[in-house]
Length: 232
Image (spheres, rainbow, N blue to C red):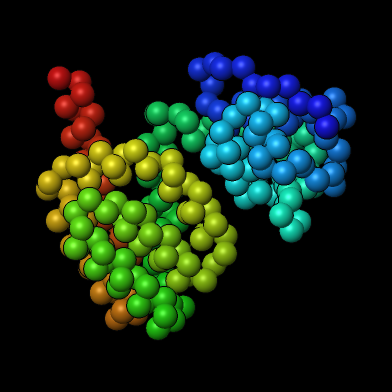
């Protein structure tokens, strides 16, 4: 399999990796159901770090373009599917999609918390409680925030919700980190997560959806404040 080294540009590395794989597929260097070279070899051939390569492969696997076969990955969809994956990467890199993203979160996470009220197991609830406890203990642990929402999606026992939320959470990771740097944000988000969990523990769907919506309103409020500060 002959692949050219990626040339440095302003384009993000995962998109460059996908473009290179797409070109190889269009030229016949990569064929359907053919296994890709091992990660180390592929990264060296393309001239990229293994972390960037794994990020690209994770998106392709999430979208069903490639699949795992033991320790190797095989291409199972055509070039058109690569194009869709590239479009998805470009969407995640846009800086002006906050409103769209929050609309997406409101429509999905409200549904998620309603299902969690119905379906969460005792083990799910213990995991969610641990996330809330972590968040309360360490004001810098933004990953506990990420894990809470992901584990809530898992507690819905809807694999589509859980898989999609796992990926799109990365789209606002930098925003989460900035918010957690503000001393007033931590206390508000801890209380919000606690109220959401309390409602799920009570199996109170109405209360849970209300508290999730209130939590998302807090995020929007901080984002607006940040934008106003940037405009000054």
